[in-house]
Image 1: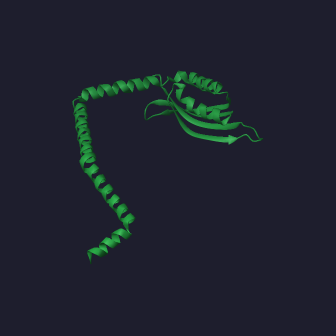
Image 2: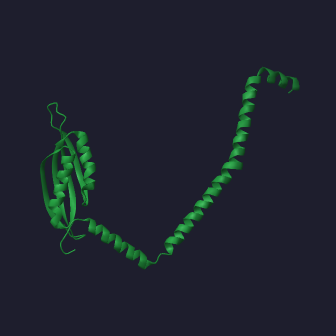
Image 3: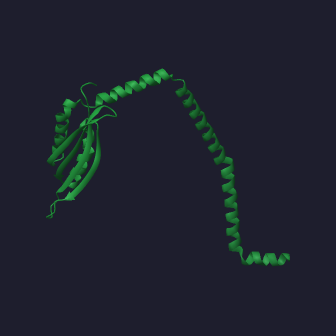
Length: 184
């Protein structure tokens, strides 16, 4: 190939060659940025993270088994104290009615069935609550029962419209709540 032919091609495709040269330079600068700046910074951050993780792991290892056991016992005792005694069931139901009242809801019915949970020696009440009100107020009620004070688990939630063009919604809530027996 002749040099004059290459020169002629370069002049006719000047714009394309400039774009190609620009892209080539951009790729070189991107690679330089990656190799000279990003990789060293990433390696430094990674090594600091590994050192910090090792320090934390050694700190946990320094705690004796007796201390871990005592801490666990203390946490378990605090957990048990948060669970109401079985004679506080009426108080718990009252808290549910108070929360419903604060949210301008009408409680239609509350049914419950007590059972002994042999696995953890707690008295559990499986409760079904029927409440009516606006959808937003019912959602707020579900969120607020978390602050009822006693431990509970929401088993199921169902909403149904009361029909007739009304904004009222019926909530069927099933929950399980736990109480300490007197011996604990």
